[in-house]
Each structure stands twice: as C-alpha cells, then as structure tokens.
Image (cartoon, rainbow, N blue to C red; front, top):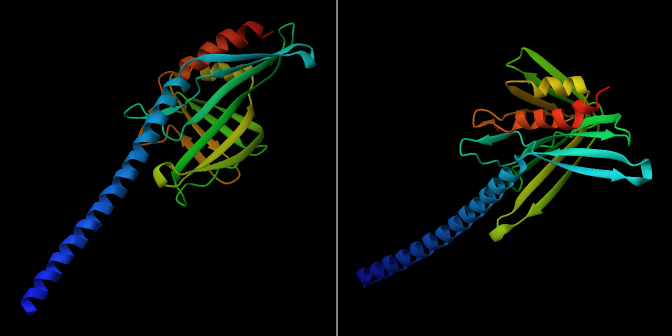
Length: 230
C-alpha cells in the first residue's frame, strides 16, 4: 500500500513540476516578447532620429520671426546599431524676418525605460545646468548652460509586464562660435549635468557615437546659422 501511495505521490509531483515549468516558460516568453518589442521600437525610432532634417515655423504673432529646429540629434547606439533609452541633442535657431539671429540653443531630451522600480533617477535639468561637449579627445571643449528644464514619466504594461519611462528635458543656450566648434570636430563626447546627477554620452563601454551626429551638426550650422552670422 505504501508503495502505491509513493507512486501516486511521485506522479502528482511530476504533474506539479510540469505545470510549474509551463507557467515559468509562458512567463519567460512574455518577458522576452516584451523586451523584443521594446528593442524593435527603439531601433525603428533610432533610424528616424539619426536622419538629418529640420522643422521650420513662422510666428505671425511675433513679427514673422522664424524658428528652425534640427532633427537627427540622437547621439549614441549599441554595437548592433540599436538605440534604447535615446538621448537627443537637437540644435535650434530663432531668426527675425530680416534674417538676424535672435537666439540659439540645444534642445536636450533623454528617456530611460526599465522594469518598474528599477529605473535610474532623473538628471533633473534646471536653470544653470550644464552640457559639456568634449571635442577632439579633450583638445577643446564647449560648455553651455540651461535656461529651463523639466521631468516627466510614463508607465506601460505590454503583455502584463510593467515598465517605467522617465524623461529629462532641457533647453540650453549656445553661440554661433560654440556651434561651429562642435560642427568642425572630429570626435565628440558629452556630459549632461542636472541638479540630481550627471550622464556621459556615448554611454560606454557598450555604446558608440552615431556616425551622423557630427555631420548633422555641420549641416545645420552651414545652412541655418552661418549664412545669417553678421
């Protein structure tokens, strides 16, 4: 009788283990599917964000002044060419109707997506925060300061897995001379410092500078800034 009970118990344990294994397998597949979906989305976003383009707007309420913002300022990608948690540095310029440069700057955005409860803290950009462009392996540098900044967050749950995305954003003032230094550089490394921390780009050792980054700056400088420098 004891033998029969042992056999039945063994059979039940095998079924329980099988059920547990199936549940674990389904759960792991859900996590894998969610991660793949995030990577595909990030990769597609990177291919668009690294392409040069501009957005031009005319403000009829302010004497038809023109604002031009570059698209294509995503800075780094991993060895597969995929950008996750993109950091974007898009220059902009505001000109009067007769072409005089009124203001210039860099619009910085940085998003960080991770499992809920494990994401890194915000940089928390505020007035006076800095971006340092280290040019040509430290031979020169450009330091610019924020005129404003902010933070935000979002929560999503694809396939039942909860993710948190934190957003940092800031607007930094820059001069034509500083912009030219970056546009003429051979190499660039960047450090962004907010009130709660700092971050270096490209993010080493896994990421590298996207090849379009400096050429995009050069194109923007030569077409949207240099012809209007007086």
